[in-house]
Image (cartoon, rainbow over all chains, first blue to last red; front, top):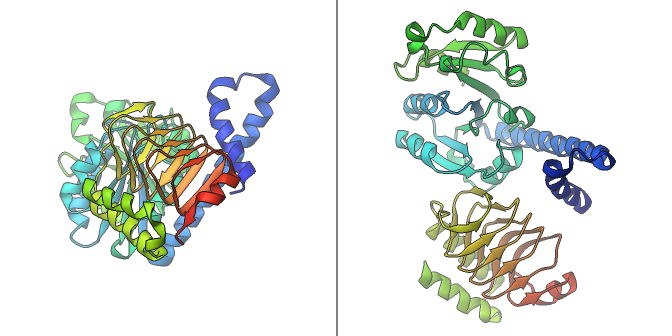
Length: 238
Length: 144
């Protein structure tokens, strides 16, 4: 990255939050933002190429806070750690709560605390992978920061993206967040064990996901009762 | 950890007694031996991004939009200003890292003031006060 571009990127971060409304700099802000996203996508492609060359499969998991991302990774890790050497990269604003839960299932974890940033980006992943011994890794999971909006701006360079929602979020949650479902390979509707009590219209959720992305695979799971965890693992096509 | 930090501090005050590869090995060994998990619960400032492991000693001040890690030790009373990125490095006590500086594989000696902005620095030792790039090139010791 050139020094000029680096300076532009630094400046945009400052300008974006406080000055976006100022007419005279709006074009500059938008242009630089596009550059940032372009850089992210290029780096994501480089990450994916590098992982493919090494024969490492990679999956990122996004979803709102409390949707059950960590619980699903725990269930998946419990089964797959017997067969694969797994690295899980956990993104959170702060704390190591999720990484501590996941590493109990015989997998390595790296925690990224993003502070004020609402999603992981390709550079975070690049920095982690650059400093890891990848000879001892077959499979990487990335758990993004709990959020259904920001992660759609940043590809991470993984083979597949899973978006997790839960029926407790209501039947409109997919309809309200089209971007993530358009760029995901698998939509997981979790906490299906609560369906009888909540009465959420799961068929509508599934139809919404398919409407935004006809290729998306929709799986209804319960991390609590293990329902369809095997199906989810099969759908990863490892 | 403190014992090894003292050892490194002694070595960087007599750089010529050690080969570049010895210094590099010393840095890598320290980071791999002593940094396994982050210790980031006690700093002054906003919400930086941490890629573990990062170890912050007491009273570290951190500015806006800072990315620390992986493998970073920062000594007590040090200050990291805005837009700084540090990885695989040791920053000793009472250091000031100025705005928009990127450090990778570096050892920054005690009481150093590094305030030339917009620069990427890697694989080197810096001890002393640096306000311009010219000053930096004069005092930095590259170990790769």
